[in-house]
Amino acid sequence: MIYLKTEEEIQLIKKSSLLVGKTLAEVARHIKPGVTTLELDGIAERCIRDHGAKPGFKGYRGFPGTLCISVNEDVVHGIPGKRRLLDGDIVSIDCGVLLDEYYGDSAFTFAVGDVKPEVLALMKATREALYKGIEQAVIGKRIGDIGNAIQQHVSPMGYGIVRELIGHGVGKHLHESPDVPNYGKKGQGVLLTEGIVIAIEPMINLGKRHVMQEKDGWTIRTLDRKPSAHYEHTIAVRKDKAEVLSSFEEIDIVLNN
Image 1 (spheres, rainbow, N blue to C red):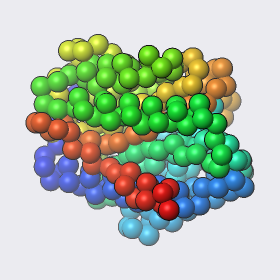
Image 2 (image 1 turned 90 degrees about the vertical axis):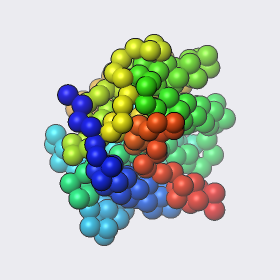
Image 3 (image 1 turned 90 degrees about the horizontal axis):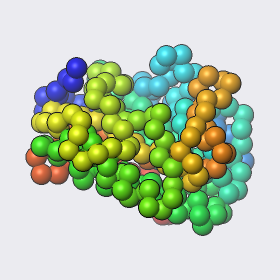
């Protein structure tokens, strides 16, 4: 069942989502070769709690970290730990925040030092695909239009679209209906109406689309061990143009300075 949000609820989700962007920007300041993923996780938790919020992922179904930190071939749900980032890595960081009883959710893939051109191209295409999907999130369209736009953007480039993991509704629960696949057919699926708030999050692989779960019970990685990129925004469906509730603005400022 899809829970349609009131305008007041959408603004609360936006408040949480903007704190996610601020947190990812703070983490971005510390991403460099040699830093451990656990150190980045601690930075994020302090930032979230300093703003009176709670880490949305910590303890969710037993997940131990504030952030999901996934390096190179790890697609999502990487557990923060002793692993040190190396020059040439990419790291996808997914962050959730719970503030005033509503969740915000966003993810960004960062380059660490000197990254291969083909991997940078994957990151660029995945971020573009996110916005292609967002363009379709307007009243009267359907969920399939979002997935189709993402698919049509990345498939001609030969990339693999992860199908086992998808976007989702966001609200008082971290994961709500409807599901938001990153592939699909135009005109199919749930009709988009006023009050729907969803997280759109393409997970795109440099190689094949197939993935597997690591023995830690959380980390999902590419089967062929080629890199994967992941970008995510929480958005509200609107009449003429989707409203992006989360933001990459502060992240981009950090990365460009």
